[in-house]
Image 1 (cartoon, helix red, strand yellow):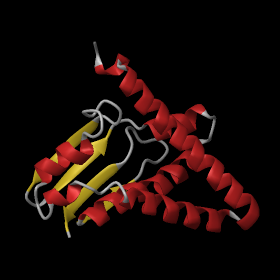
Image 2 (tube, helix red, strand yellow; image 1 turned 30 degrees about the vertical axis):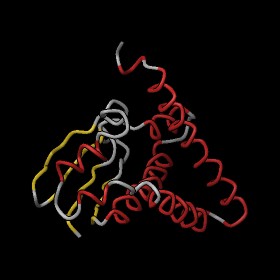
Image 3 (tube, helix red, strand yellow; image 1 turned 120 degrees about the vertical axis):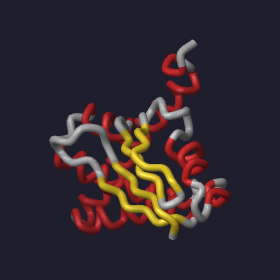
Image 4 (tube, one colour; image 1 turned 90 degrees about the horizontal axis):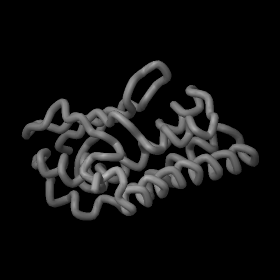
Amino acid sequence: MSVHHNDHWIALLESNKSRARVYLEFYRAIERRLGQTAAIEICKEAIYNWGRDLAAGLQAHVPDDFEGLARSFAFAPDGGAMFQPRIDRCDKEGLDVQFETCPLKAAWLDLGMDEEEVALFCQMASAADHGTLEAAGFAVGIETWQPGKTGCCILRIRPR
């Protein structure tokens, strides 16, 4: 049976689509009460803090086991099926990974959000990876998806 038709994979995909909707609902509720700037700041803070809790196990790769980090992070949780990571660099100096697809981005587009708003949400959602990788002990730079670009986020992970 293909990984794409596996019940666990479908559940994982649906949970990520659900997470995309939760981000949207929290953002819109905060924006209505406090405005866009506060909504962005609060969502990024909450998403970052959530991401910190996902760092368990990644500390084993500090300071420079980027091959191990690629396996444990870039290809998690499903061997790469959902995010389709493309490794552009993996050596003792760092890991560069381009995620070719993203269930969050796809869900936001499916909800009819315009590309500029989706780009904002990609930027907010990237706080999770910042939280995860920074809590694990790495430095990370993230180039989030922008309208007109292919794929999704590009992460450049380095020793801290």
